[in-house]
Length: 294
Image (cartoon, rainbow, N blue to C red; front, side, top):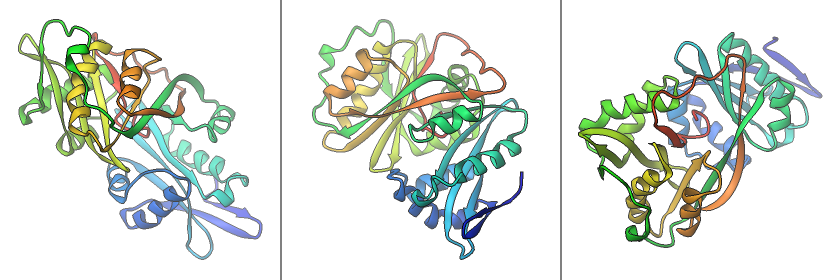
């Protein structure tokens, strides 16, 4: 795959992404109405590999990234092209370059609606929808109205929970993203579900975009998820909050809507190549870390 592309009347070139690109990457994401702050770009750059497309006068007009998930798989994300170039094949060219870098790893991504047809044409297969809920929290949850939790208790996240959370995320997500998770834990506050002296679920919350994002969230049932996120939602009453989930319409998504986090958008989880491994144990990922990492 060539590292230059002719676009009438000028040429684009792809170069490695660095932290020095963050100001222009932020401008690029703003141009397509993505909420990422410069700090959000900094996080993904430090944990991934990226390319940027520049034109002949050094304007940054495109981006693409991939993130190792152990040795067998990679997540693809942050694929953006300037609106004025979206009908010129720039996205396909950038995807070809990043797929060459990824090699024979299995690939997974979350496709926006405008990019869905591109990924289908590249051979990606749809797996499941991802529902983005966000908005200003309008009410504090009434915990008395939550479904029964069962054995165990929900308590605030503590520094000594780090190892248990990393292990639980690894089992539920079924792929290794320890490095980024280790940093995200340090950036987050949250809750854990403790049962029999062991952490059996967790919900993290950190600054992102217009406010805060809840995620990842790992638990065995939606009832557990509601008990894990209710204190976080209450803490952010009157503030902008987001959660991305693959859960279908049910108690979790209805809870989010009832507290001001409306359904804002839907993307599609897609995969190519090696099959994704199944989760280990009963815990599942109910809330994404972000759409780039899954």
